[in-house]
Image (cartoon, rainbow, N blue to C red):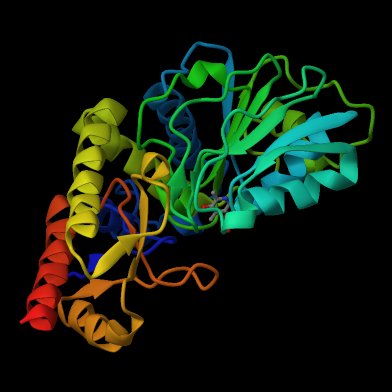
Length: 356
Ligand SMILES: *Cc1c(COP(=O)(O)O)cnc(C)c1O
């Protein structure tokens, strides 16, 4: 039986997507060739990447709204650099809410003045700072919508006049937002969209071409836009699987449908964390992530017993990030409600065992 997979990334993908993807490895499109042995410029693959790009915009409600979707390589980590390379002229503003924001800040610092508008680093990133001021003369404001490691999430899009850039790696396509407020969105595929190896970047028309520096071709968004995301060989398999996952989501009813499921899953688990006297949540309640729930044992001496129990219950990937400790249950779009049920059941069995 397939495990209940709470892995933070790479992570769970829909069963039917995995099945179609494995078939395409052997015989794609009934052409008696594998998806990964045909030219990326062949018609069948060009239609895959075009479909993936248009589905991404369609699901976010950005189709025909002046945005371009690209599938690049180098992960979200390369976007930390590319964003600054392409957009930072003099000054950029960043919100530091976690490990990934911190890394984005570090990369961007090399390109101009860095204003860190607020940070929750002092408290282990256990909350989202509020009430900060974004300078009006910044070239852009960057934030991380969902902090995969700490388990916090920004619930409302920050209000600002400057261009808005967002690392949405771990919660893109999981909830409705007014996506038209963003000027640039990026996300590594392996959290909620597909396998590792592709990064989705969505860019609003007209935001590029404002920096003076020379930008190397591979790091230049305009080059990738001009070549329809085919400047060099794209990661064909990762893009194909992402396309299948986006199609799966569309067929289910899109983001508005999955958001309801995600809220239900998160409420189910957080209710148990709050009710069960043996566990405690790690993040401030109002800032808790619906994607990555972090929690810990009240009494660490029970760790071995609980770890044995959840592993025996066919659960995978529950260990917290090494920088946070405790547990992290990642509940991405493809994780079914019954997997959350399995985890809640183990937490209750554990309580019965300890308190008996
Ligand atoms: C995982 C993650 C990253 C890093 O992604 P890579 O593809 O490994 O570079 C960046 N930001 C967030 C929010 C993430 O969850």
